[in-house]
Length: 74
Image (cartoon, rainbow, N blue to C red; front, side, top):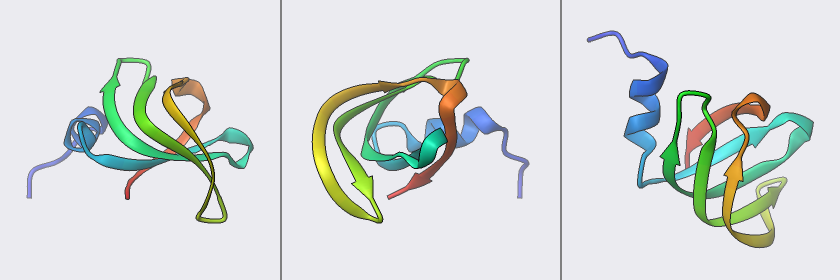
């Protein structure tokens, strides 16, 4: 199995639904439409999650890379 680099994993998630964990315990689920070298992530159709339940819809959102703790397929 070839070794994967962090940006390889991000490119797999592009245009797919992901869950992004943030510092402070925030979680967002949405379609990842873009990312950059600082790991800033743009989500569309995003929702804020609390304990796996949708708290509110936020639409399009940009998440700052230095606050991201994890990215997971939804």
